[in-house]
Length: 457
Image 1 (tube, rainbow, N blue to C red):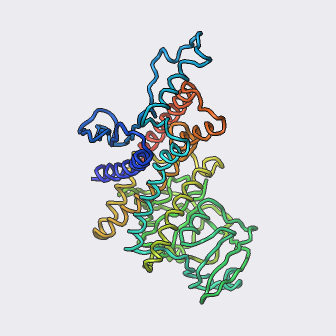
Image 2 (tube, one colour):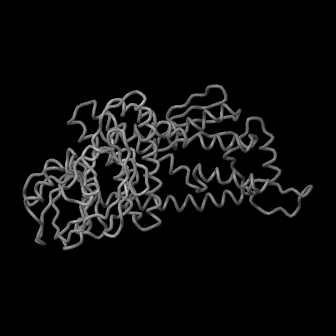
Image 3 (spheres, rainbow, N blue to C red):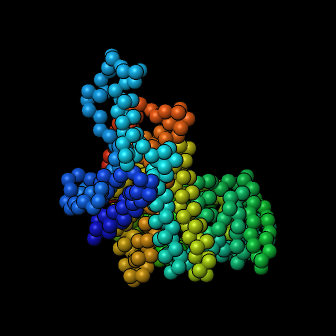
């Protein structure tokens, strides 16, 4: 079943993306020769007007083929020609003909071409926004409320109280609770780093700053939320006992040393009653619907305590709030994706943290199986949340300035505008071929790693 759901989600994302190209091409007078879902041989096909609409064998993909955009060059057109007429090469003559052809992509202005290319990623963002409106209308948003403040902590001494709404944290704007999660995902809280935050209480805004409390104790490298329905691992510190044991963010802790764990609060209560002393521990975790036993040994280290916990639960809002927080939801996933890509370059994340089709199908399946227990409404909400995440990711990834992606095509259009003439088709094709091969190799590695992870658990 999870494969069917995954295919349906992928198909929706791709169709919406390609429909963006299709619609803007039609609006700008560019002929769409074929609009298809999938790759490979056609299964179903029909011609309406100037366009062929197709469903192809391999559904993980799609295309909007426009006249003159993907012109195939014959082998002899790559060969050097010693004789040129009027100083023009055969390739330049061909391109000039394509630009003059009625309905050709190349005959459109630079602005029109850029709009057609950008429409694909934009429609992915639009789909994510539409799904956000539905989700927030039904289950609401997660306000950045302070749930609990540790008594006597620096945060409490600075004046922070339960019920306050955090609006900024160390200079970064905070609208929803997950904004704080994002900060901790991409940055480490250090003992000598002053925390500055702004919060609202009774309509008034306050700004405070304090140094976090540092405690030396045995640690596993675990971050989780007290108010989560399950004891979900929010983050795992790099090179920590949890990391070395193969436990990842998203895993659900169901037992510690034989004691059943059902919620984040029950996990907290367990650690309060059973202080870690460096002895080996056994954890039972749930991942992708399967249960695994992990053993690890906590290490004595400095624990930097924030001093307060914040809300990640959702509350309903007004119609105006639905629109506002739908934009917030879209912004959250775009920013998270961009920061994750940045983390690849800073070393915070590696290629092994990427998920390909296999990993995504596994995530879809796990989410579906877990959501079924909460009824059809929550199942739909969870599936829509996945569409929001994947669609926003697809939009951002497609805007990367790589030649085979929409961002690369926009880069070529920008270069054409700066140079006053386009790049040689031969050069452009060569660049695209090299990048395509590298991306295919990366995809193969990611799929291989996903399969190993599933097998090893």
